[in-house]
Length: 222
View 1 (cartoon, one colour):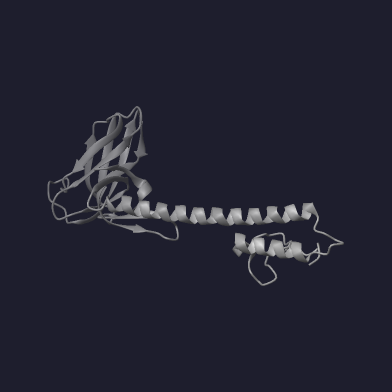
View 2 (spheres, helix red, strand yellow):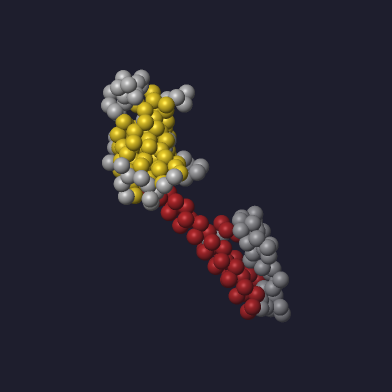
């Protein structure tokens, strides 16, 4: 083997290069590398020995490729650990009530709905409006503003004091600030029935009584 014959291909992409036997450079282990290196040293042309710079270059190439492969393996292992950790954390939320950013809620045959609304600075009044699936106003609740967040409870009754049918309802809130009103965020209390892990997106979804929501939308666990 002459000095011009390198252990590895000189392709621009070190991970896509292949050896003479078709093995990917990234797949060559340390034993295979040493075997090839010794074979090259034994069979080199005495009149054209392997230059030290070329020898060191091949060592550097191998070190780089194996380092990248090792890093990939470590990242894959870490990702698997994070997925398992997320699933375990999500499982602990099943059956719990969470407070999450949402504008829709599911009213049961009994009980009501609880939530919070963001309170802008300078608010003099907070109005929470409950609407049915058609958009018709069912109930309006006026709140005394509290610093940061203002709590509200809807007992499931309409403006006449009549129990409304169970189902999906929409909640919106506005804050009165001086002479104008401002729409503000609503956080609704929901029960987590199950959790789903999206293997493609890598996110955890909470399946609640009001639908699905991302774990990142949760502001408080009750």
